[in-house]
Length: 440
Figure 1 (tube, rainbow, N blue to C red):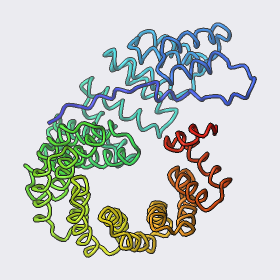
Figure 2 (spheres, rainbow, N blue to C red):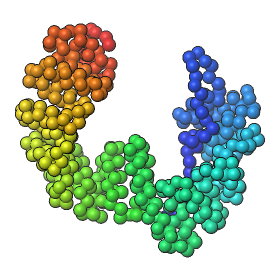
Figure 3 (cartoon, rainbow, N blue to C red):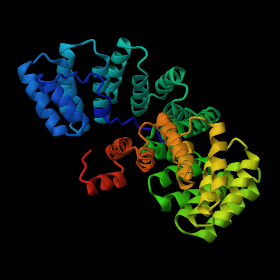
Figure 4 (cartoon, rainbow, N blue to C red):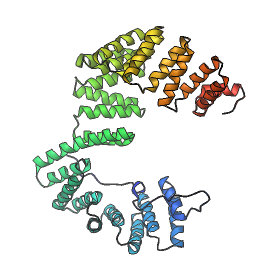
């Protein structure tokens, strides 16, 4: 079983007393505000210098004392941090966050009893301070008082039922107390909580945090194939192709019927140029779940990377047969058909996609693109305009609409669109305007 999860915090990220002031044009920024800004960007030495200036100007600035302490703690100067926190508390004895920070500094120094006192004081001031309950539990465990630690983890779970670290620590504490059955139950819940938290972090864009949580789930449950698959997805997104392949392969080793892992590994192999390996994996995915439209869709995407557009169309057909509302399948089948020269069929696919999702900017752009190729410039302009209605930052839509307008004699409108495309960073538009000596 895992040891207690030690609650180590990046204090700069959670300086609870730090509030960035609104600074208006021409307004003088004070040392405290500058210190906050430097701390936020990781310039800890600079932040300390600014907080020190603020303290010299106003020795009763409790926030400056507190924040300088937090920066010192982040730099490993625990004793210096405690001195600053104590000074902040003499100026503002009712601040629960400062007591909490004192507790963390003492806990990191091994003074668990002192830390427990500070966490307790923080909780007296704020009974809903979940992190203080958790950290007090860690300190109580360090001091050997597992019964008290268990009570604090109970309180954390009561306040935050999805707190993976609390489930983990309570499970570890129950092992120490001889409650194996309760420990097993808690650690299983911890696994699922870490998995869920990992997925939530992916949705929020915190991919490194997601990998850490999936790894925690796997440390507790090494046969959790879904965690390997999901961690592989995140590693792939971060460019760690070897790590992603290893995770997908492990998921498959643990569960030979893991459709998503076969599918994901196949798509990754396709991107790496391993056509034979990719198609073999997709075949296994389809064997595992022949009714999955996503599997056929992914194989179709892979086929397009190999230039096998006819095979891609066949897979998109199957995907749409299984899910007639699959917008992306219509859009991508349209693109594959266009590559094959079947322009009217491509047009029909984009129209089908838009019938399902009338606000799909890509659908309008792609249909406009085909209309341009079919010499229906007015129809193309109408579609590019709809694309921009739903995505005002669609640079390529401005570019293509600008060309179409110019070809219809609307030079002013065409130039205006080309400038918008250039402003949005489209290099082809910028180069075109440069050639004509036009700025944007």
